Image (cartoon, rainbow, N blue to C red; front, side, top):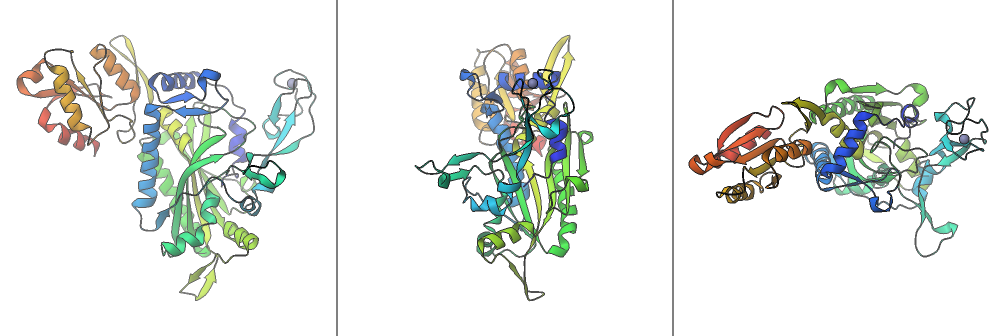
Length: 450
Ligand SMILES: [Zn+2]
């Protein structure tokens, strides 16, 4: 759960200035098939995006790396996948029905709507220049719909605003079936929905988004130790994705930013073109979540501590990351323009483990048997690597396309290949080429990717 980040929202969400780099990135994402506007043929839907053929690969790579690092490589974390719909009582117990809102204000003159804490109400409306504000009112950020065939108040249900509650309500199920002992974690990746008053900055603030959340259950006396551990571990995770370390920082929440249940909270932030903004929150939530569900459900949700011979309510250290924000960070950070022999080159310097395509194969020309050799190399490599075979256009244009796709290696079949069974392997970043035997390609690329 992540509504402790009011300051972060305040700093950014009125910042609708899409600067030059963001515009270029949006354009590249459409041109190369990373990200499209949702429902584009009908004029789109505000702040909603679709991941295209390359985008879904990048996004899946992010999720797979997270899942491997947080769940499968660890003995103390198990995964789960909860439904998006939950009994509405969950959101009453969690505090979302009463507390999960932002203050809203309208301009009476032009009907523009603002987050009241994002603007100066002593000044006139930014859109029409007249100062005539309505009273502030609270706007709940949960999206509502009706569940089942009746549309009365008894069928109101929410699209989950976070994945965390699906973990908390399954604490006993997961702990007992996986026979976990404290400290241990339950992790999940899934969609969440928030009816944000203001959206913007491309993938940064959208109403539908995907979360990667870990709830790590600990002995209440050990929560600050585990908070330190997860703060460092999660900060390092972003560095290991190849993101520029100087553009990452940790920011501890001030007392007035903390949600009432959180003892301590840190944000991992990235320096976007629109300013430092939150990628992830890591919080010591104490026993608040389980206590709330114990109180509301009347069920026993404690853990028996064999050392003290007592039932205790575990505390929770939460790591809550955004998939889409991570994808945006990776794209922003990887985007480079440079001049090569008087021409502008756009290149995405994606870490090879993130790149949608690892290796592209090109016949230099479409004759003399080169396309057939390229096809054969492509077939051999595709079972080991994300490979792509491109025969269209001049070799220069094919290199440029793969540079924009972030493909780290390009293999070219040329006339020398016909004589000595070697190909050139081009490095995306240095653009240097070396000759490698066709039969050595798999080992060569595996070494590079280590
Ligand atoms: Zn106005």
